[in-house]
Image (cartoon, rainbow, N blue to C red; front, side):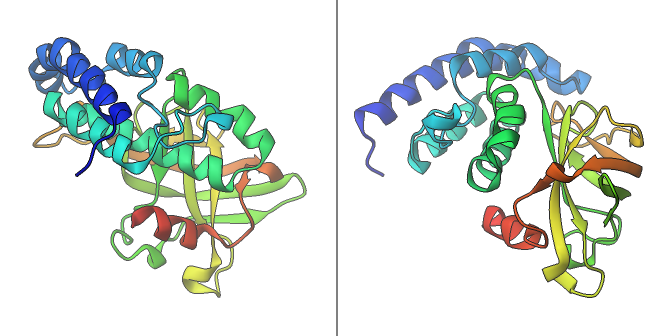
Length: 237
């Protein structure tokens, strides 16, 4: 793989951070199953979040090779930390590509500077690899939407400030009837289930998020209605 001078520079910076900051703490973080809050903040300050997010939206604006280099070096330090980088990249890409200007202004800066932690809520008790089986629903209301359902095995569920939730908006349309909603986790009706205890990468917090009659504004919808599955499918690739 050909690396430009920029790729080499970001590799050296990330490797130095992994060797000097991440690796000395990795064993303790894994043993204690503790979210790496200080490292997370430092990554935001270093500009390691939003590698491929366009500069006009506050990202670094580099290519997929740069992102791969960052992920490789972070994983050398501790794979749980690379998980966090990957999640921010995913959510930042969703917002930059499909969000509107108010949504980008509200959520992107915090995700990229590490003042906010995000979650991507897809899987459910009966819907893992078969995403078309989700039961979580979002129904229209006078104010916007009402969200109901539960999501399991969600990365960052115990610590997330904002959740991107795939929900069914047309019960008759199968995978063509799903939408993604941006949910402030401080809203009434959002609760967290127990944290899962994993065999590895245990600093990556995984758990449940439950939504009971959660009232959402109309602008919580990411992109057009019923476009959630194509967005998910593109990101999954």
